[in-house]
Image 1 (cartoon, one colour):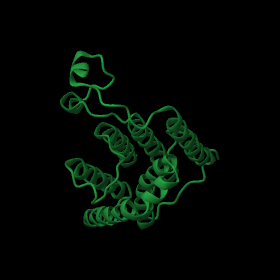
Image 2 (cartoon, one colour; image 1 turned 60 degrees about the vertical axis):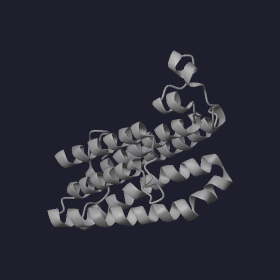
Image 3 (cartoon, helix red, strand yellow; image 1 turned 90 degrees about the vertical axis):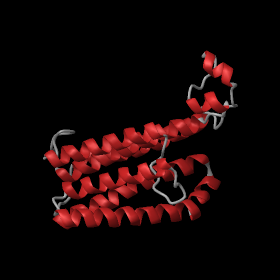
Image 4 (tube, one colour; image 1 turned 120 degrees about the horizontal axis):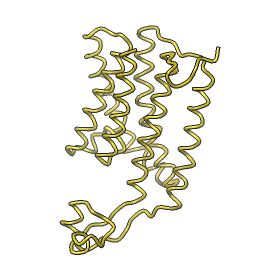
Length: 218
C-alpha cells in the first residue's frame, strides 16, 4: 500500500513539475537545456518508483532505471526528428495528442515491464477501464476546444506595459524582451499533464487492486 501511494504521489508531483517547467515531458536529445535535463531526471525518478512498486531488488531497480531512461531518451529523440513533424503537418490537434499519448506510453511500457517481472496482473475492474476510456475521450475533446479557443501566438508587449500591469503577460522574460506569448501551447501543457496523471494513476489502480478510487465490482 505504501509503495502504491508513493507511486501515486510521484506521478502527481511529476505532472505538477511539468506544468511549472512549461514542458510536455519529452525526454529528447533535441532538448539539451537545463529544463531537458530536469525532465530526464524526473523520468528517472518515476522509473525507479515504478520498479520499487513492483517489489524488485535494488540492483535490478538501478539497472532498469538506467536502461529505461536511455532507451526512452533514444525513442523520443527519434520521434522528435522523424515522427512529430508528420503529426504536426496533419494538424495542431494531432501533434498535441501525439505528445500526450507518447508520455503515457512511456509510463505504461515501463510499468508493464515492472508488473511482468514481479508477476503482478491487472484487475478486471470495469469502472477503472471505463474511466480510462472516458479520460481519453475528454482529453481529445479538450484538445480540440483549446485549438478553437486559444490563439497560437499573441503579439509581444512593451516592457513598460508589462511592468505597469497593463499587459496580459507577466513573466520575467517578457519584462526583459517584450516577447510573444503562446496561450495555446501553455494551455496544452496543463491539459497534457492532467491527462497523463489521471491515466497513469488509473493504470496503477488497475494493477494494484486499490479500492481507494473505486469499489471492487465483484
